[in-house]
Length: 307
Image 1 (cartoon, rainbow, N blue to C red):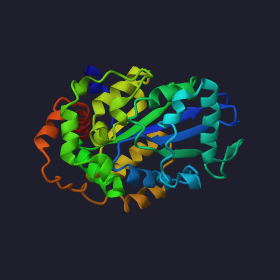
Image 2: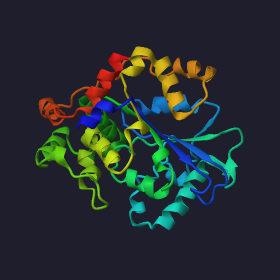
Image 3: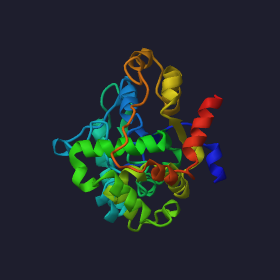
């Protein structure tokens, strides 16, 4: 896994669309994507980026009330599975129009659309769908991903889903660990090739699945994206010097600096990451063993301390 040594910091995805990329658009489009990971500060980061006068968030339709305003959830939709390239193009046009006033341009005063869907990073079908939607420009995309210590992130994600009312689907925390134990070679799941994605769509394993950073990064590289397109940051970086981190992310995604950066920085990332209580009866040692061979988070953390 020598490729891991070259990672930068965090995951925001910047999509460059040329006029010929999407038939419905007549102007060059820039999309800023924050693609991961859940419960790692993505909502706060997107609130910061949305304060830029260049940025517009997606228009969420009334029937999409289940989604947070920052999340478009387009490229991870299951129904895309059966779409032909022509249908994908048509639907991408509709997707991009969420950020524009018409088919011919951005909403007045804006120049970048912001899609903060943190499930994109761990959904194995997303990289190949982006290539299908933007065959001539996918290699120009940039990604920023926020990572959190994997055990704490898994616990926080499980508690978050339980609080939202998914306790019945989740079962107990111990049942998730048992399901993991029954899954042989969990770290050696083959890369997605267009077939069934059993592990990533298993609700009971979802909190842990989203913490397998190495596996998901390997999927993106396998599907033709390069290391130079990624900026990876540990959540802890915001506790050390959030102003410089926000400035770095803004530069990476092409947002012009301004007073908005310092203003919003005062409102977000103001304390330590939440301390998550361990569920009753949970075998945390077993959970830690799942991440023993995960290298990405430790490398990103090490890189942060070297800066």
